[in-house]
Length: 188
Image (cartoon, rainbow, N blue to C red; front, side):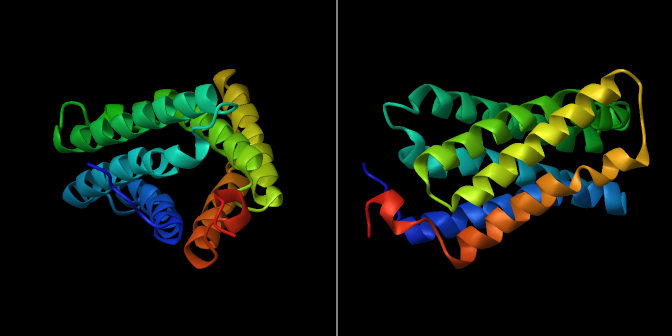
């Protein structure tokens, strides 16, 4: 059984899933356990859905291993988000949710983001500047994360998270509005 989705619909779906992946912030903002559970699960499923939709574009001979690494990192990230949602509902482990996001999830996110932006750069599905911006923003996030490992904390670090957040939202809206580059998908 073959499941065909047009490139335009696929790009729009990826953009929407990127935005939905940020719904995991709802619990941190509202503190509402039921809403937090649902948004963490939705976020986790969105994170898993993105590489599945991009898989056909990234699964070329030169990119196959990186594509698998991307898929595995996002599967791990999404699973951790779903577990985080479940932890919200269990009072004895709710506090571990933050630990999951701060100490484990972040590395899956960084690995997945590095792979994504490198794959986007190689395939040219979106303009190169978006991919380069994403790579630089992810490297900044990695640097901040490593510095925090040594116990150094500063409010400046929170500001340094903005480049990756803005890049991901920009990428999402680019995909929703413009879609993939037709030349890169062979549909020019």
